[in-house]
Amino acid sequence: MPPTISPHHHYVIGFTAALAVGYVAIALFQHTAPIQRLRRLGGDWTAAVVPRFLAIITFLAGALLLFSGATPAVAGRLQWLSAWIPLPVVELSHFIDNLAGVMLLILARGVERRLDAAYHLTIGLLVAGIFLSLLRALDIEQALVLALMLVTFVPSRKYFYRKSSLIEERFSASWIAAILLVTLGSIALGLVSYANLHVSTDTFFRFATHAEAARFLRASAGVLAALIVFAVLRLLRTARTPIPRPTQDDINDARAIAANYPQAAAQLAFLGDKSFLFNERRTGFVMYGVHGRSWVSLGDPIATPGEAAELIRSFIHLADQNSGWAVFYKVAPTLLYLYLDHGLNVVKLGEEARVSLADFSLEGSNRRNLRRVWRKMVDDGYTFEMVQPNGIPPILPQLRAVSDEWIDQKQAREKSFSLGAFDEDYVSRYPIAVARKDGRIIAFSNAWISGQKAEVEADLMRYTADAPAGIMRFVLIEMMLWARNEGFVSFNLGMASLSGLSAHRGAPIWNQLAVAIRGYGERFYNFQGIREFKQWFYPEWEPLFLASPGGAARPLIIANIASLISGDLQGIVKK
Image (cartoon, rainbow, N blue to C red):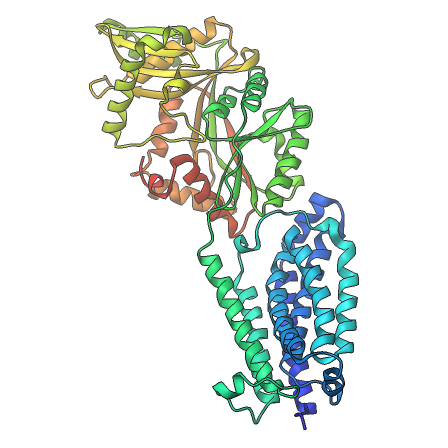
């Protein structure tokens, strides 16, 4: 006679299933912020709730298959089944049914993350589970439950739009614990159900209609092997698929848009390290880079304010499709309401210095220090020239020598993403401000030119080791005078990081932490000195912000941005 399961065993099954599924349900719904964010993005509460509900159903289906595989079949059904179904089919169905169970436990995470592949695989496994339940033990009740789950799942296709791989998904401690709880619980249940089980090679390889204990042993070994293989695949997973680089048409369109954009920093789009997301009419774009899970837009969209809302929404959706975090780095105050409307958190990064050129001169008591520096440079024989792009190729070797010397003396390395780097093609695109002494180039800075003659911004600022202390002030003074004479409205001196943050008791925690970092990090990065240098020119200061997910994700996002700028983790700790 085949062993039968006692009421006590039914209690064990119910308690273990309820515990595991309840654990997953709590883990999925304990944080309401993601749900609120999805509601803002989708405008429909079902878009936030349905995938989480289906994740619980998927997890429950996996638990059901594992628990049923660890208990004896209903008396008499195997005998009837053996008259119609060959024994190898019964054996294989039992084994695959348990593998389908553990795969559903894993896929539940992908369902919760709204992965396209998880949706299709889950439907396939539910269909397989229905047939396998009938083939392995004529378990009609289980097949009906799985069919109801399938009916619930199929109409929800629209909620599964992400294209990333399940192997790439992060499994939290809660998910790992829940999967292990169900798996080990099913094995424990099997050991209790088959109390007289003798674990041996003979038992493991015993094949007979009523050899259910042997089938349980083989299925359990297969389940554990599947978990080990999945864990190894995650450890050995390849890097994420590279983000497509812009085509020449993309670059041409972006260049035409940037040429009319009133902020000079739009020229950072052409460093060669960014991808572009255009709107449908290709009249605006987002320039972005990806590191880790952070999809980082540099600044606000390069578009009119009316077009920016569409691009922000599209970029958030793109990052979300790829299971990433949408991040907007160094954004101005004007569009903050759009980022807040999309559920992003906003924190201040620092302040940007901008000099009004209409009233800029070396006259007056406020400018006497600048006037003194400029006069000393002129009296010492230093000259200035604004070299246009067609005149740059002959002086490129001298510029390269100055740049290399500057990097060597600063023990620095070239940056990227939000800062320019010395690349001959790149520096040849823009006017170069050059300071000479006796015909030798001592210092230079390239100038980004905005559209509508709105502003000029100094990018690279490099000088030789023997250059006098005031050389870059001299270069900037001359650049501003040149820009004023050319009819530009303002001159952008760039951002002073962590500048203008208040650390009073009622200030946000981010402000207090940033101020502490500024204090402790002063010896590594001259935060205060940079602001004081820019203050020589009496600029107007405008705050810049980071719009991104908050909480525990923010430190990782900051590290990802730093890696984008510095090239790698090693570059973060170098100047």
